[in-house]
Length: 187
Image (cartoon, rainbow, N blue to C red; front, side, top):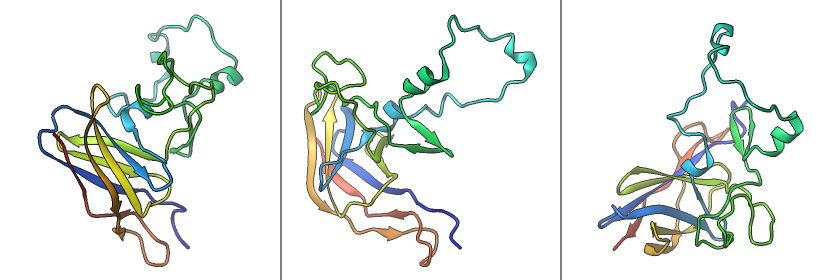
């Protein structure tokens, strides 16, 4: 019997050159599904959830208005199921990217339709290294683009073939995988 039904895979992106001005690294697969910046999608690690005892509840501010449960669920930016992030319909594309609203209003495309959270999340590990976490699927070929704060392209590696290697688990059950780093020259 296998212990898990799915595993997370990672791609490291190494930026070569002065990467101090790089604001986002985006990986897109061969069918056009692209990563989102993890910090814009998930609750930050610096804001952990904590359990509170009954004596601590009186110290917390009282909400002005309590919404019915249905309304609260409609406003959740993503769904959580047993600790796993499930793609949901509320991530707004980065300003200036395809699908971003002209006014920058969060939560909708120009047509008003919600945008799903992509299955790939990018995070900066250091100034020159980004990690793309893949919660669903492992593409065979990707394009990785580094963007400056103003949205202009700082560098790109197109049509990069990925060779996945299992780094845990077992042959029978599978396991997490990774691939050699993708290098992007930035200028």
